[in-house]
Length: 462
Image (cartoon, rainbow, N blue to C red; front, side, top):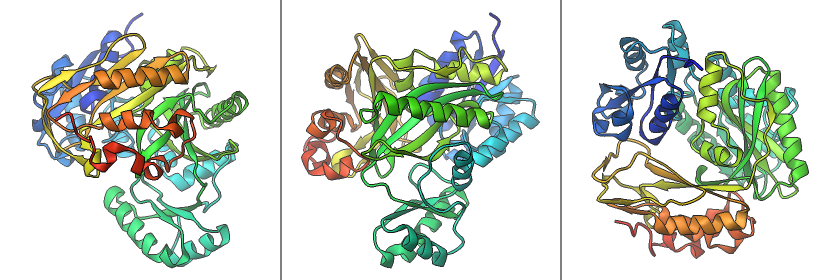
């Protein structure tokens, strides 16, 4: 079959850039990399068919520069642009700039990104499409006084969230009416600084929830492929640490109902490209829509391991107008867990640190995948996200998968920078995790029992 595109610009860096480049090559497509001066020796630069330097280390002058990205794509004769995750991946201005320059943006339409990127609007859209939503404001709050009134009506605790944001920024948990004004002002200021938009909305807090998300791919014409759910409850400050699929919380009946509702909702809005719908689920397995991420996510390999579907290749295909490989829901086979290996020291409040990789040993064997841009001699820059690698393991059931994860984490060796490897070993050994009795509060509640978070073993691989 002929390639869907001749040449794609990969508008990102690190392991996701390398992941997209590999998918392009498997599809017979040339891949063009971009890099800052801090990434001259990066693995994605070496793997690409061609690479262009687009600016200095400051991401605002390189990876976040829309003119630089568009110019790089046009200079190299690219047909399309893949944004990866982070940086410009959910920037509708960038998507429109690509379209205006006859480049296919491999992602949702700009209008869809705008609508679903506004979290309060996304809640209304998904509620209209039949998804249950967390009780809260239907739109952005207009003032502190409105926030105070709504919180009193819903009952504390409540959560203030940035309307235009993500990644845990612009969020504040409020347990007491006396804290609402201070929390509102702090969250709004943080949201303004991070996203250029200080608007907030407010939701009732679901006590000790699981964070469950569903991976979808839409063809833009009502066709939807739903690829099961991931459980992302192990978090630190709303940042995911470990993900697994399927969720240990859901039973088959709940799983089927969730997939059916998500499929209908995405078909109703003619969603195009890869996307993830995120939910909070309570102890009764009742689930509530939170938000939709209109991009491929860091944890997409977990879904690939249990479904056998290549999310990136499907994403590229539908961007070119090809039909999905199939429609409907794919049931997961076995169990998979992804461990985010970051250049951080859990024993020092997750302090990130750069450095040179002096030694690297990656695990292997059946059911093991490592997505990384590391190599011995590589210098980890401090200008960007601290993610070094993603270790993903699969086995026939959750218990066997945990055992395989322990074996692989013990084999993993990264010398030169601190890592979160030992934190993952601590988590896998905790009785609550083994039993699946977890929530988004797990790391905070178990902190005293996790040696790596108390300066006892964190960052040993230095």
